[in-house]
Length: 186
Image (cartoon, rainbow, N blue to C red; front, side, top):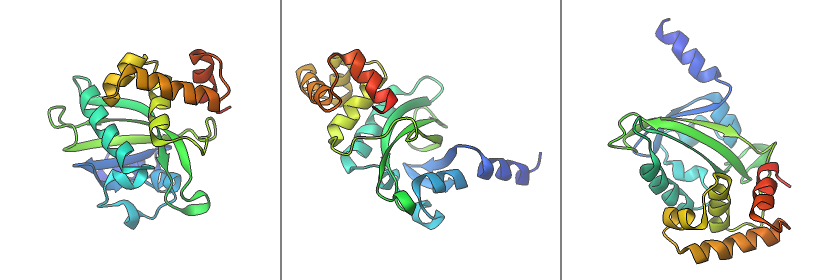
C-alpha cells in the first residue's frame, strides 16, 4: 500500500480517529468531525479540552489515563463528551474512547485515539453534574467506591454520596440496577 491508501483508510474509518501530541489534536478524520459537529479548523491544533463538558473533567481524565496505561501504552474507557456544533451542538453524549500512547513512558507526548459515539444506546441525563458523570463512568467500569475514590482522589464515603444521588436520579434501588440503567440509557 502507498501513503494515499493509508490516508484514505484513516479518513474513511467507521469510527472517529485522532492523532495527538501533548493533548492537542494534530489530525482527525471525517467521522470524528461529524461526531463532534465540528469543522477541521475548529479541532486541529486545539486541546482535547474543547471536547469535554468541563475543564475539570478534561484534567481528571488526563490524570486517569496516565495512571491506567498498560505496559504497551493502551487505554480505554467510556466517558461523557461534548459536541461543538451541528444539529446537536453543545449536546453531551457517552463516548467510548480507546487508544494508545506511542511511548508509554510519556503518555501524552503522542498518541492515536479512537472515538465511538454511544448516544444512540445511552443518552446522558441533562441534570448530571460533572462529578456524577465521572462516577457514573467509573461505575460502568465495575470499580468499587474505594477504587473510584482512589482514581478521583476523594473519599469512598464521598463516592457513596454521589452514587446515592445517581440512584435517585435514575430511580435505581441497587448499584447493579443503576449500572444497568446507565448502560441502557433508561
